[in-house]
Image 1 (tube, helix red, strand yellow):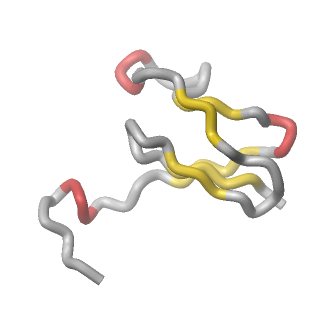
Image 2 (cartoon, helix red, strand yellow):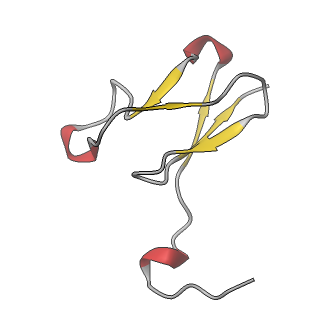
Length: 65
């Protein structure tokens, strides 16, 4: 495993737990503030326990089971 190269690399991405009823899920979500906006990305989440990360903001999403 490699060491983080910058201070930003050492900060773990956020983990957001979502319900299956929230699917299909896109990032940023409608509830995110304007400062968090980036191009909309749909995340490949289907089943409880599935996780996916946004390629822009690195937020991790997990379907609750």
